Amino acid sequence: MSYKGTVKNGVVVLPPDVKLPDGTEVEITPVANSADDPPFLKAILKLAKPRDWPEDFALNHAHYIKGHPKKT
Image (tube, rainbow, N blue to C red):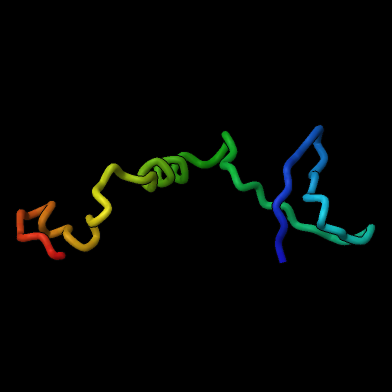
């Protein structure tokens, strides 16, 4: 099970409907990338950003790359 929360003044604040008993062990994984990520990871994430391609690019990639007729 997972929950989303935010950090406020160094404390993770969970939504009000989440009730965890005192002493419960939790694991926190930040969603955002940190500034000290390895250069290789930064390069991969830069390449993985969404492109400005048409919505039907996957279906009609041959049309956009080689000029074949579009599929409908």
